[in-house]
Image (cartoon, rainbow, N blue to C red; front, side, top):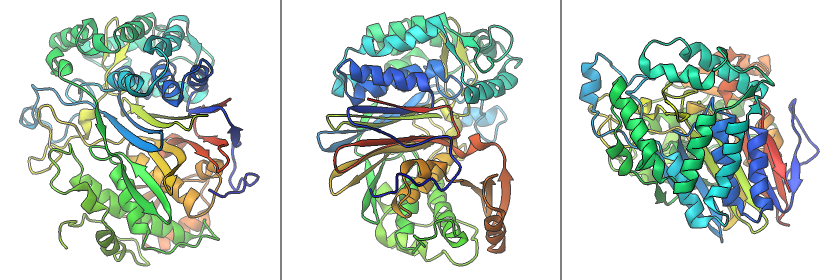
Amino acid sequence: MKFDAFRYRYPSRRGLVYGTRGMVATSQPLAAQVGLDALKKGGNAIDAAVAAAACMPVVEPTTNGLGSDMFALVWTKGKLYGLNASGISPEGLTAEMVRAMGHDKVPQRGWVPVMVSGAVAGWAELSRRFGKLPFEELLEPAAQYAEQGFAVTPVIADLWQRGFDLFANREGEEFRPWAETFAPKGHAPRPGEIWSCPDMARTIRRIAETKGEAFYKGELADAIDAFARRTGGYIRKSDMEDYAPAWVEPMKVNYRGTDVWEMPPNGDGLVVLAALAVLNNIELDNEHPDSEENFHKIIEAMKLGYEDGLKYISDPRTMRVPPEAIIAPEYAKKRAALIGEEAILPAPGDPLAGATIYLCTADAEGNMVSLIQSNFNGFGSGIVVPGTGISLQNRGFGFSLDPESPNVLAPRKKSFHTIIPGFLSKDGEAIGPFGVMGAFMQPQGQLQVASNLIDFGMNPQEALDRPRWEWIRGKKIVLEESFPEEIAEALRARGHEVGREPDTSVFGRGQIILRDENGVLVGATEPRADGTVAVW
């Protein structure tokens, strides 16, 4: 990719970082250094990704935990591999049961949305298939930070306080271990305050010793099962014993000459590809990226892609429309024809008619990893298994209770998933990993970053710095405070219902590593987070 390394069009707290022997980009500096240490010990990019990913539940527990899900794209020896380490719903829970509780949608917190967690199995599988260093060695730095403590960074301290406000005094026995684990001093850790969790350290070491077996078939699975039975949960050890991550074929759209890769469903990376497929039929003003017409067209394409995703994406075993149909060129052309001068009320088409962390790594051998893991909605379910430090995700919140939906909650099923790693390549050669975390913002952030890089030739840091928008529903969008008011007014004139959002955290947090034609790595990290690019 050609870009100007000296140009920073938008106010930034970051600069481009270059290196040759290895690079790790994360939203928390300690995890990036852990990944870089793995490279310096003789590991590869996969080892670095596993080591950093295992550290993130310790140093950024506000967005992911030992009970997270995970997806990864791995480029090695000229091929891209996809690992789906998202979990499954309990055998003993159905949509009918949840509706009988009086709910019209899956609750966001508590036991109902808790599913089997896939991240631990995903780390072990990445290490087994592609890693060079012993698994125990990769996880030991995370255990040490949990045991000895670390100084909490500012953005994470703010997110921690939000979790404290939500869970510290929540009623129910299942929520009591949250405060014991994450607020042992009676308050959320403040910036610079030391936090440690010996329970988490012991758990990580047990996971390392057994290559994850203790989490799914051993004493950690027993602890999850016992706490669920005692406090009204639905997940059982038998659900966990039957779980395994799956290697899948990534999907792509060639966007103006660059291949943009995403994981197939149940993740919503298909939304990014659908929007790009639509934009392939739309002319943008490459010389003036911040024109209101560019914003309008990209927002409209995002709306159309998301509506199709929300209607059709589910566990691939229950999808009623093939994913390939949603990004087919002829279908995308029909969807693009819906985009005019005014904002539209989007609706899904018929293709058959005619709270998260993201990190990326690279090494001198050409290996690259795009990895994302999440508890969803901050601390997830709010349930922490006593004595383990395991905070459980709430991915069941992504299910529908509508019996007609392909995404309806059912036993042993994967839910609609918002976490999506991205990857770029051209003419069969890797360009590099990219991603933007942030729940339903993720496809929107990825679309904006990919367009910034490909359409407007922005350097990676510019692509992350640029002010973002988020489509909410219908014609409603929200803009970051740094958006020029004249653009906001121009979008209102086109029929968009425009609001402002001062909280930058809702617009996602991304990382990028690209490799140039000389093999030099260039990295960028999110200005809206505490992260860093660690380089060798």
